[in-house]
Image (cartoon, rainbow, N blue to C red):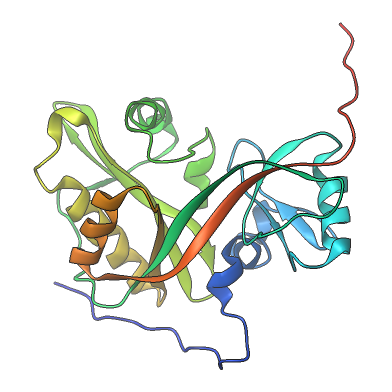
Length: 245
């Protein structure tokens, strides 16, 4: 049975939207139990997710807190960032889109099974093969992950990444190359979305601007592009301390 469309209330035009700084909202909200935090900066444990976040990316004090959190000369991903303070360097950047559920048909998939710690080696293998985005040994702790197996082999995967008040991100959507074209990703996205809707949240997701195939797929499923996004790798000021054998 399909679940009804749920929409979170929209902020006033003068207020920032919670999705504009989704990682911070997650790390200070439903994922606070996972957060490593110094003042106005937070991050996930390194084996859970690479993401760091700033309370206000325009506040120099937040950048100072991030430097204290991750250490000197460290390269780390940052979200909701356009520019960096003096002394910091942007090592790499990528453009993306943030898409929100506006007309998604969500329903459970009978063939989808919940994935747990015992499945991590197989999950990491499928992620390495398909490259949907970062997935680490403890990423599965971020939320529900569903998979489809055939002949005992994991052939498709999707799950939840950032979770913030009223919203949950769908991520790690991938299918083994030998099993594409069967609609497995579509069924898993709808199944993950059904679980998100069941607790009153609205699904959203991110895709690289260059991944036009994925964007078209998500639009056909009922997602709408909300805004352009930019993901950056930044290097903190200073040098890493030398290690001795």
